[in-house]
Length: 286
Image 1 (spheres, rainbow, N blue to C red):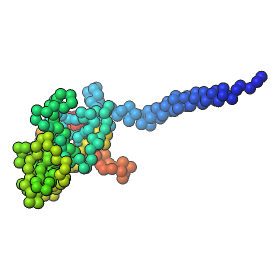
Image 2 (spheres, one colour):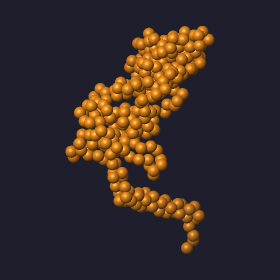
Image 3 (cartoon, rainbow, N blue to C red):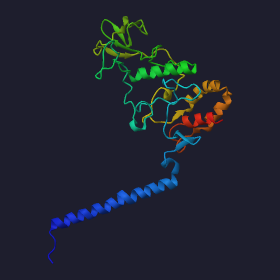
Image 4 (cartoon, rainbow, N blue to C red):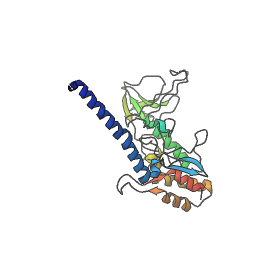
Protein backbone atom coordinates (compact mmCIF):
# COMPACT_ATOMS: atom_id res chain seq x y z
CA UNK A 1 0.00 0.00 0.00
CA UNK A 2 1.42 3.31 -1.04
CA UNK A 3 2.17 5.75 1.73
CA UNK A 4 -0.11 8.77 2.11
CA UNK A 5 1.17 12.00 0.66
CA UNK A 6 3.26 14.03 3.08
CA UNK A 7 0.79 16.93 3.19
CA UNK A 8 -1.96 14.58 4.39
CA UNK A 9 0.32 13.12 7.08
CA UNK A 10 1.17 16.61 8.31
CA UNK A 11 -2.50 17.56 8.52
CA UNK A 12 -3.34 14.35 10.39
CA UNK A 13 -0.49 14.95 12.84
CA UNK A 14 -1.71 18.52 13.41
CA UNK A 15 -5.27 17.25 13.95
CA UNK A 16 -4.07 14.67 16.51
CA UNK A 17 -2.08 17.34 18.34
CA UNK A 18 -5.14 19.61 18.33
CA UNK A 19 -7.35 16.89 19.80
CA UNK A 20 -4.81 15.90 22.48
CA UNK A 21 -4.12 19.48 23.53
CA UNK A 22 -7.85 20.28 23.56
CA UNK A 23 -8.50 17.38 25.91
CA UNK A 24 -5.50 18.19 28.15
CA UNK A 25 -5.82 21.98 28.33
CA UNK A 26 -9.55 22.33 27.73
CA UNK A 27 -10.93 19.49 29.85
CA UNK A 28 -8.39 17.78 32.12
CA UNK A 29 -6.52 20.89 33.33
CA UNK A 30 -9.67 22.95 34.12
CA UNK A 31 -11.20 19.99 36.00
CA UNK A 32 -8.03 19.44 38.02
CA UNK A 33 -7.60 23.16 38.76
CA UNK A 34 -11.25 23.48 39.77
CA UNK A 35 -11.04 20.39 41.95
CA UNK A 36 -7.91 21.60 43.74
CA UNK A 37 -9.44 25.06 44.24
CA UNK A 38 -12.61 23.57 45.72
CA UNK A 39 -10.67 21.33 48.09
CA UNK A 40 -7.87 23.69 49.14
CA UNK A 41 -9.40 27.16 48.66
CA UNK A 42 -13.11 26.44 48.80
CA UNK A 43 -14.21 29.81 50.20
CA UNK A 44 -12.10 31.90 47.84
CA UNK A 45 -12.99 29.74 44.83
CA UNK A 46 -16.67 30.36 45.45
CA UNK A 47 -16.32 34.13 45.78
CA UNK A 48 -15.95 34.44 49.57
CA UNK A 49 -19.67 35.20 49.75
CA UNK A 50 -20.97 36.69 53.00
CA UNK A 51 -24.56 36.08 54.08
CA UNK A 52 -26.70 37.72 56.75
CA UNK A 53 -30.05 36.30 57.81
CA UNK A 54 -29.92 33.92 54.84
CA UNK A 55 -29.34 36.70 52.29
CA UNK A 56 -26.15 37.47 50.38
CA UNK A 57 -24.85 40.87 51.45
CA UNK A 58 -21.53 40.90 49.63
CA UNK A 59 -18.11 39.34 49.30
CA UNK A 60 -15.12 39.70 51.56
CA UNK A 61 -13.03 40.08 48.39
CA UNK A 62 -14.96 42.96 46.79
CA UNK A 63 -15.58 46.29 48.44
CA UNK A 64 -18.85 48.18 48.44
CA UNK A 65 -20.13 51.61 49.34
CA UNK A 66 -22.07 52.37 52.51
CA UNK A 67 -24.04 55.37 51.32
CA UNK A 68 -27.69 56.38 51.05
CA UNK A 69 -29.73 56.85 47.86
CA UNK A 70 -28.19 60.30 47.35
CA UNK A 71 -24.65 59.03 47.74
CA UNK A 72 -24.14 60.47 51.22
CA UNK A 73 -22.21 58.39 53.77
CA UNK A 74 -24.37 56.46 56.23
CA UNK A 75 -22.97 57.76 59.49
CA UNK A 76 -23.54 54.55 61.46
CA UNK A 77 -21.16 52.62 59.20
CA UNK A 78 -17.46 52.67 58.46
CA UNK A 79 -16.84 54.03 54.97
CA UNK A 80 -14.82 52.33 52.25
CA UNK A 81 -12.11 54.02 50.23
CA UNK A 82 -13.04 55.69 46.90
CA UNK A 83 -13.50 53.50 43.83
CA UNK A 84 -12.88 54.26 40.15
CA UNK A 85 -14.59 51.05 38.96
CA UNK A 86 -17.65 52.19 37.01
CA UNK A 87 -19.97 54.09 39.33
CA UNK A 88 -18.07 52.58 42.26
CA UNK A 89 -17.10 49.00 43.10
CA UNK A 90 -18.47 47.64 39.81
CA UNK A 91 -16.86 44.19 39.24
CA UNK A 92 -17.70 44.42 35.52
CA UNK A 93 -15.72 47.63 35.19
CA UNK A 94 -12.73 47.06 37.44
CA UNK A 95 -10.08 49.71 36.84
CA UNK A 96 -8.09 52.57 38.26
CA UNK A 97 -8.67 56.18 37.21
CA UNK A 98 -5.43 56.16 35.15
CA UNK A 99 -4.74 59.68 36.42
CA UNK A 100 -1.22 60.44 37.60
CA UNK A 101 0.46 62.93 39.94
CA UNK A 102 0.86 65.48 37.16
CA UNK A 103 -2.92 65.66 36.62
CA UNK A 104 -3.46 68.89 38.58
CA UNK A 105 -5.53 71.19 36.34
CA UNK A 106 -9.32 70.99 36.17
CA UNK A 107 -11.45 71.50 33.10
CA UNK A 108 -13.95 74.02 34.42
CA UNK A 109 -17.59 73.69 33.33
CA UNK A 110 -18.70 76.42 30.94
CA UNK A 111 -22.10 77.85 31.91
CA UNK A 112 -24.69 77.15 29.23
CA UNK A 113 -22.44 74.77 27.31
CA UNK A 114 -23.39 71.15 26.59
CA UNK A 115 -21.34 68.02 26.07
CA UNK A 116 -21.44 65.72 23.02
CA UNK A 117 -24.57 63.99 24.34
CA UNK A 118 -26.42 67.24 24.87
CA UNK A 119 -26.08 67.24 28.65
CA UNK A 120 -24.98 70.34 30.59
CA UNK A 121 -21.20 70.69 30.67
CA UNK A 122 -19.94 69.48 34.06
CA UNK A 123 -16.25 69.92 33.33
CA UNK A 124 -13.69 67.43 34.65
CA UNK A 125 -11.86 67.38 37.94
CA UNK A 126 -8.14 66.66 38.02
CA UNK A 127 -6.81 63.94 40.29
CA UNK A 128 -5.48 66.65 42.62
CA UNK A 129 -8.88 68.30 42.98
CA UNK A 130 -10.56 64.92 43.52
CA UNK A 131 -8.15 64.25 46.38
CA UNK A 132 -8.66 67.74 47.83
CA UNK A 133 -12.46 67.51 47.63
CA UNK A 134 -12.51 64.06 49.23
CA UNK A 135 -10.19 65.15 52.01
CA UNK A 136 -12.33 68.21 52.76
CA UNK A 137 -15.53 66.11 52.81
CA UNK A 138 -14.01 63.45 55.08
CA UNK A 139 -12.66 66.10 57.42
CA UNK A 140 -16.16 67.52 57.78
CA UNK A 141 -17.68 64.05 58.26
CA UNK A 142 -15.18 62.99 60.92
CA UNK A 143 -14.82 66.36 62.65
CA UNK A 144 -11.13 66.79 61.84
CA UNK A 145 -9.09 69.00 59.55
CA UNK A 146 -9.31 67.91 55.92
CA UNK A 147 -6.47 70.23 54.90
CA UNK A 148 -3.57 68.80 52.95
CA UNK A 149 -0.67 70.18 50.87
CA UNK A 150 -1.47 71.59 47.43
CA UNK A 151 -5.17 71.98 48.29
CA UNK A 152 -7.15 75.18 48.72
CA UNK A 153 -9.47 75.72 51.72
CA UNK A 154 -12.49 75.25 49.43
CA UNK A 155 -11.28 71.81 48.34
CA UNK A 156 -9.68 72.16 44.90
CA UNK A 157 -6.12 71.89 43.68
CA UNK A 158 -3.98 74.90 44.65
CA UNK A 159 -2.49 75.47 41.20
CA UNK A 160 -1.51 78.64 39.39
CA UNK A 161 -0.91 79.36 35.74
CA UNK A 162 1.74 82.07 35.66
CA UNK A 163 2.10 84.51 32.76
CA UNK A 164 4.54 87.44 32.41
CA UNK A 165 1.93 89.94 33.58
CA UNK A 166 -0.51 87.93 35.73
CA UNK A 167 -1.26 84.70 37.56
CA UNK A 168 -4.46 82.65 37.46
CA UNK A 169 -5.82 80.22 40.05
CA UNK A 170 -6.89 77.83 37.29
CA UNK A 171 -9.03 75.52 39.45
CA UNK A 172 -11.07 78.30 41.04
CA UNK A 173 -13.75 79.57 38.67
CA UNK A 174 -14.82 83.19 38.84
CA UNK A 175 -16.23 84.81 40.89
CA UNK A 176 -14.33 82.74 43.49
CA UNK A 177 -11.68 84.51 45.55
CA UNK A 178 -8.24 83.01 44.67
CA UNK A 179 -6.53 81.09 47.45
CA UNK A 180 -3.61 83.55 47.31
CA UNK A 181 -3.78 87.24 46.49
CA UNK A 182 -0.48 87.48 44.63
CA UNK A 183 2.43 85.36 43.41
CA UNK A 184 5.92 86.81 43.07
CA UNK A 185 4.51 90.30 42.70
CA UNK A 186 1.79 89.28 40.24
CA UNK A 187 -1.88 89.62 41.14
CA UNK A 188 -3.70 86.29 41.15
CA UNK A 189 -7.00 86.17 39.28
CA UNK A 190 -9.82 83.66 39.37
CA UNK A 191 -10.21 81.44 36.31
CA UNK A 192 -12.69 82.18 33.54
CA UNK A 193 -14.36 78.93 32.34
CA UNK A 194 -13.57 78.22 28.71
CA UNK A 195 -10.45 80.38 28.60
CA UNK A 196 -7.25 78.69 27.41
CA UNK A 197 -4.44 78.91 29.97
CA UNK A 198 -2.17 76.31 28.37
CA UNK A 199 0.55 78.85 27.59
CA UNK A 200 1.08 79.69 31.24
CA UNK A 201 3.64 78.06 33.53
CA UNK A 202 2.02 75.53 35.87
CA UNK A 203 2.86 76.19 39.52
CA UNK A 204 1.34 73.95 42.22
CA UNK A 205 1.42 75.76 45.58
CA UNK A 206 2.15 73.55 48.57
CA UNK A 207 0.80 75.85 51.24
CA UNK A 208 1.68 75.69 54.93
CA UNK A 209 -0.09 72.43 55.91
CA UNK A 210 2.26 70.28 57.98
CA UNK A 211 -0.05 67.76 59.68
CA UNK A 212 -2.41 65.70 57.48
CA UNK A 213 -5.20 64.03 59.46
CA UNK A 214 -7.02 62.27 56.60
CA UNK A 215 -5.08 59.13 55.47
CA UNK A 216 -4.09 58.66 51.84
CA UNK A 217 -6.31 55.60 51.27
CA UNK A 218 -9.35 57.68 52.30
CA UNK A 219 -8.88 59.99 49.30
CA UNK A 220 -7.43 57.69 46.60
CA UNK A 221 -8.90 54.70 44.80
CA UNK A 222 -7.15 51.34 44.63
CA UNK A 223 -5.69 49.97 41.39
CA UNK A 224 -8.61 47.60 40.86
CA UNK A 225 -11.31 49.84 42.26
CA UNK A 226 -12.57 46.83 44.24
CA UNK A 227 -10.37 46.85 47.35
CA UNK A 228 -12.53 45.73 50.32
CA UNK A 229 -10.03 47.00 52.89
CA UNK A 230 -9.06 50.31 54.45
CA UNK A 231 -6.00 51.16 56.48
CA UNK A 232 -6.00 50.86 60.25
CA UNK A 233 -5.45 54.62 60.39
CA UNK A 234 -8.59 55.31 58.35
CA UNK A 235 -10.63 52.93 60.49
CA UNK A 236 -9.33 54.63 63.65
CA UNK A 237 -10.31 58.04 62.23
CA UNK A 238 -13.90 56.84 61.73
CA UNK A 239 -14.24 55.02 65.05
CA UNK A 240 -15.37 58.03 67.17
CA UNK A 241 -18.16 58.89 64.70
CA UNK A 242 -19.44 55.31 64.50
CA UNK A 243 -19.29 54.92 68.27
CA UNK A 244 -21.23 58.14 68.80
CA UNK A 245 -23.87 57.32 66.18
CA UNK A 246 -24.44 53.85 67.66
CA UNK A 247 -24.20 54.95 71.30
CA UNK A 248 -21.35 52.52 71.89
CA UNK A 249 -18.20 52.92 73.98
CA UNK A 250 -15.30 53.91 71.76
CA UNK A 251 -13.22 51.08 73.25
CA UNK A 252 -15.79 48.54 72.02
CA UNK A 253 -15.63 49.86 68.46
CA UNK A 254 -11.84 49.92 68.56
CA UNK A 255 -11.84 46.30 69.78
CA UNK A 256 -13.97 45.32 66.75
CA UNK A 257 -11.47 47.07 64.49
CA UNK A 258 -8.66 45.00 66.03
CA UNK A 259 -10.67 41.79 65.53
CA UNK A 260 -11.13 42.50 61.82
CA UNK A 261 -7.61 43.69 61.09
CA UNK A 262 -5.51 41.38 58.92
CA UNK A 263 -1.73 41.44 59.08
CA UNK A 264 0.82 41.76 56.30
CA UNK A 265 0.72 39.05 53.64
CA UNK A 266 3.38 36.42 54.43
CA UNK A 267 4.32 38.61 57.37
CA UNK A 268 6.12 41.30 55.37
CA UNK A 269 4.12 42.28 52.25
CA UNK A 270 1.87 45.33 52.44
CA UNK A 271 0.36 46.85 55.54
CA UNK A 272 -2.26 45.69 58.07
CA UNK A 273 -5.78 46.37 56.77
CA UNK A 274 -9.40 46.29 57.91
CA UNK A 275 -12.19 44.59 55.93
CA UNK A 276 -14.98 47.19 55.90
CA UNK A 277 -17.93 44.89 55.16
CA UNK A 278 -16.98 42.37 57.83
CA UNK A 279 -16.45 45.16 60.36
CA UNK A 280 -19.83 46.73 59.62
CA UNK A 281 -21.58 43.37 59.88
CA UNK A 282 -19.89 42.78 63.21
CA UNK A 283 -21.26 46.15 64.38
CA UNK A 284 -24.77 45.19 63.27
CA UNK A 285 -24.54 41.82 64.98
CA UNK A 286 -22.95 42.88 68.25
